[in-house]
Length: 95
Image 1 (tube, rainbow, N blue to C red):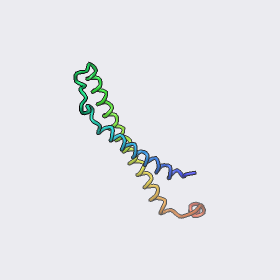
Image 2: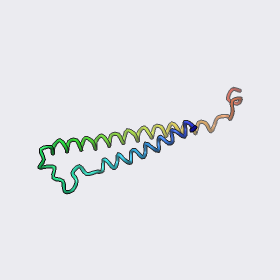
Image 3: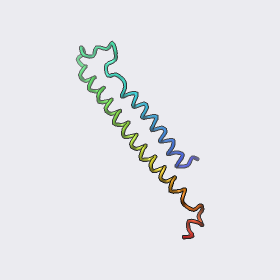
Image 4: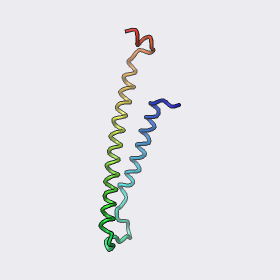
């Protein structure tokens, strides 16, 4: 079974991959070449929904990135703090 540290590292990597996918969604054009949405009765609704989807993708990406940054900071600080501590149970209890 994987340790919590390994699982957190995998989650961070999965989060980065999710952000890449959200970036792809955000970069997609709302109106593809050759589409004439402006003549349609549903043009305004389609444009509004597409813009809302892009906004949601961008906001989700930033939220994921901020969570990744905070988790990496926690992981790095716990790794750094563990380096200065004595090794085993007896050493920790000998204070």
